[in-house]
Image 1: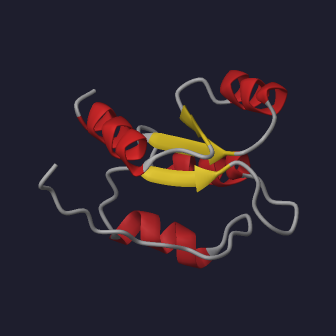
Image 2: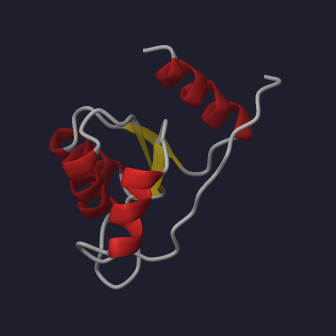
Length: 103
């Protein structure tokens, strides 16, 4: 694809985490990729809802190895989020990023 992407990671999330909230406000984000299931009872959906309070139009890719039922439930709860089921190829991820970039 020939493009470079800057990646910012946050290893943990708690509701209202100042690191995430300040990062969303100070760093221009083009896309968020988050797993459906995170540690300590926090879900990717929780993260998406928090970030969308600040960046309501941010494109999001939700990745998961969850069951088909859990993924369908996530799609219903988060209709504007794109879902990529694990395992996936890097080519699939990059194609979805490109697709979102041009929406």
